[in-house]
Length: 113
Image 1 (cartoon, rainbow, N blue to C red):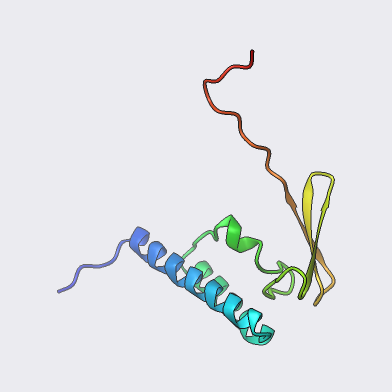
Image 2: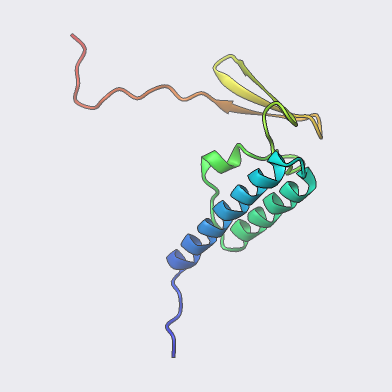
């Protein structure tokens, strides 16, 4: 009888599938098939929610938080920098999302002077 998968294994498997879906969404969006790319984003989000998986920050910035469409700067979204923030404007729903710009962390143990 095969052993039961642990929660960590299930989440790791879901993360690989989510990353695969986002790469497929990128391929479809490059070809101009934004409807299919949006569907892949929706499937990836549902899979992550099913196993209570937090999406990595690099994937969170790739879709609109309001209409869940896959964003490609210059094609269906505008990117601006203002007041130490990166602002993504979705062309589909006309909403925006703001992300802070992280400062570089100083090396630990190194003193100035």
